[in-house]
Structures are given as C-alpha cells and as structure tokens.
Amino acid sequence: MKPQQLTFILLIALAFQSLRAQQSDPYFTEKETPEYQKLYIHTDRDIYFLGETIWFSAYLLDGQNQVPVVGDQNLIVDLIDTTGNIARSGLYRLADGSSSGGILLTDSIQTGKYVLRAYTNYLRNFGDESFFYKPLSIDRVRSSAVPETASESEILENIEAHFMPEGGFLLENTMNIVAFKITGKGGVEVNTSGYVVDEKGENVAGFQTEYQGMGKFNFYPIPGEKYKAVLDVIPGKYFDLGEIKTAGIKIQNIENIRQDFIRVGIYTNSPEFLNKPYILACMNHGEVIFTEEVVSVQDITEVKILKSLPGGGINRLVLLNENLMPLSERLIFSDNYELVEPVISLSDSSFSTRQKVSALIMGNDDLLFGEKCRLSMAVVNENSLNALGVPQTIRSYLLLGSELNGYIESPESYFEGSPGITSAEKLDLLMQTHGW
Image (cartoon, rainbow, N blue to C red; front, side, top):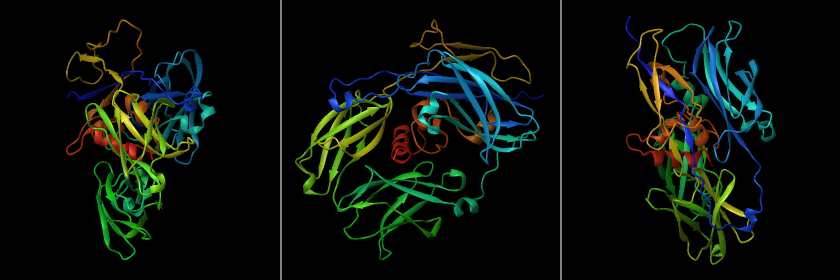
C-alpha cells in the first residue's frame, strides 16, 4: 500500500504588541469601549462524510489584546443547513478561554452545505455578527472529489459588481480611486475586466481585477454627468458607481509601502473645505491609538504617519471636522504585531494508514515553551488542501475575518505574495472592499 502524503496544519499561537499614542483628544479618551471577545473554532477539516465526527478546538480571546478569557463559560455550537434549520447543537464548557469537542454526523443528517456556528451567552449581547461562522460540506460517499461548484453560466447569471470609492464617496472634478469586487453565484469571485461609460455610451475609464475578483482604478467624474459600469463577461448588464458629491473632503491615496511612514492624502474639490481645522484619528480594536490635527490649505494635503504608531492588524482612519463629526474613513492594515510560530519536526516525511506519527514541537528563537501554551493540530489530505485553497487559520480569522464584512476567499493567502501582487497589496485591496 502506497503511503498517503499528509499535510499538517498547526493552529499557531499569536501575540500582539500593544501600541499606544502619547496624545489623544479628550472626546475619544472619555469614551469607554465595552469589553468584547473573539471566538475561534479550529476544525480538523472542512469536508466530512456521514458517520464521521467533526472534531474541534475552541479559543475565546479578549478582542483587544488577543489573550485567553479567564473563567468558565458555556459554548454553544450549532450545525446549520442551507434552510437555516439547526441539524445538530451541542453545549460545551469553556475553561480559561479554551474548549474541545465533537459533533457526530449520523445517517439522519442530510448531505450538502452547512455552516458551523459557535457563540457564548456573552457574545449574544453584541448580536449575531459577533458569532463565529465557518462553512462545511457533508457528503455520503468518501471520494477524492471536491464539493461541486456552480457552472460558469450560473456564475455569470448571478454576477454582481460592487464599486467602493476610497474615502466613502466620489468627488466630481477630482481624480478618485475606486476599488471594486466582482462575484458570482455563492459569492465566488469572478476575475474579468470592464469599463465605465458616460450618458453618451463613451468609455471614460477601464478596470481589471487584480486578485480574487478585486481591483481598483482611477476615475474623474465631470459635473452633471452620469456614469455606469460594464463588465466584459456580461456586456448587457450595467452597474451603478454610487454617489457623486459636488463638494466634499475625504481620505484617499493611502501609501503603505514605505519603510518608515504611511502617507495619507486628504482630497477636496471645494474652497469651502480649505483653511479649516480637521482631526485625523486612528482606531484599533475599538480604541483610539492617536489623533493628529490637520489644516487643509490646498486641494490635496499630505499627512505622514509613523509606521510604528498604528496597532497590529486592522486600523480605521477617520477624518473629523472641528465639531468632531466624521467626514470620511478608510481602513489600513498594519503588521505591528508579533507572530509566534512553533517549529515542528516529524518522525518521517510520509506515513501509511494508522501508522503512529510523532511530532516534536519547539519554540523558535523568540519563543520559550516553558510557559503554558495550548495548541491544536489537524491532519489534512494534501489533495483536498490543494483543491480547496489555503484554509482559514486563527491568524487570518483574528486579524481579518472577525473584523471585516462579507465572505473572504482563502483568507490565509493574503499573508503571502503571489505572482504580480505582494501581500501588502492584497491586504490593501481587502481593506478597500470588505471594509468599506
């Protein structure tokens, strides 16, 4: 019997640096952010068959510093079908931020697509959006096949294109940066090109997806003109570009690739917004990291932010007027966090069925395993992993999935570069589309 090639996926431990500003506006410092938590469920895989068990480990963390929540809580885990019915539900004990368990898939369960939902009674206070969700697939016969996907005709029939101007809106008589995302049936990303037309049907701007159905382009709206977007894969369908303001001020043209600082552009198309005081605030995990006073004296004002200031992960830049009313906002991603990744040594490079596997887990140079540390490990067939793409991990969930809107395809892939696009460019596209 030929040994099966197996890929080990380790649930990595994360530690985040805590960065705080030296100064902050009293308006923000007086606001108390309610304590919030993040729940992550690590399943042993994403595809199951009837008769098997969904094994999982649960991690409940403080939403700001990513450390385990101390104390005991009840964990509710539901398996929900496509009609919204709960096929299985279980109650488990969370002790000091961790738990584990399993859900047996009996023959009474229908095959198909499911969602694993998990929450605590405390998370109920923040609504369903604070719960943990993960899509799973359940089949009847074990095979090497991957779950069925929609056909090309089905994808195009249900195609959607969403256009998201940087800063929240379009300004006329201004060169705007517009991010977009194109999806088909089931939220599958569609990679294509397209163009923007005016009322005469003339092409005024073109665009091309860069990664997983996302991209961005420059667009200069003329006063009084109306515009629509067209996709090359379905030329008979038109899409709205959103509101075009005759006068306004917004955050735009974020440059986050330099080594020492982030360049933030503040754009306006009207004299009424010039020579007035503004505040640029940076928030991370619901907490204000720093504020900076800005006076816009020309159509484009540049603000430089030290890269050491934003907190690790997603930060929200908000532009406020002198009355502290928000005018525009933009998400940025910062790598100001420390990733602690264990080093794994296996007893062999390949194993046969039911062969004992020995794994030595050690800390790297920056990590000593003398302290208590909880880890979970899953063994996944390499063919399944390659077919389904890079899975969700605790890193991608805590830093991306738990704070952004919508479904993110292969979230862990955003932390690695691909041909023609860097990791930083991927993350910035994600900030402009899912965080709009």
